Image (cartoon, rainbow, N blue to C red):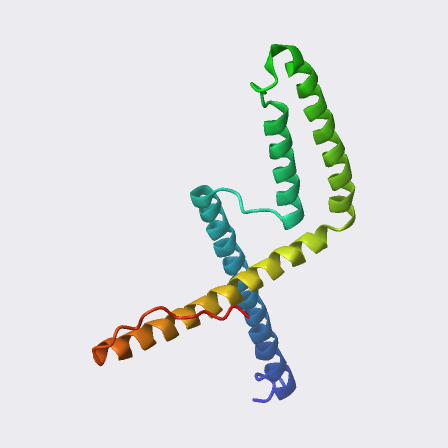
Length: 160
């Protein structure tokens, strides 16, 4: 009878290895499915909203290029026909000098612009919060005075 059954050690090892293999396959399947879902969602958003914005440095570079393009193509009606081409050449030269000055700064410090953009967002959020809090105080004061039948009148605003 003992010849028919495998030793207990061998029986214990085989199912454990099979379970580990199944778990590894399940984990890979989960990761694969999640990656596919994420890729599909990114593609859907790209088609719906267009390409995502680049870094702040890339956006600044685009802004400088667009402003330079607009200024270079600007016709000056104030200078008339005589000084028009000369003025246009001066504008192009100034635009090229400005681009030459800005470009190395962007190249050397791209992360700085990301940090500045994030800081600007934080400052805007803080300002918005302060304004909303002040508006709530003003509206509460007006409501209490109106309830008593009084005119709230002008209020001095301390800007400090």
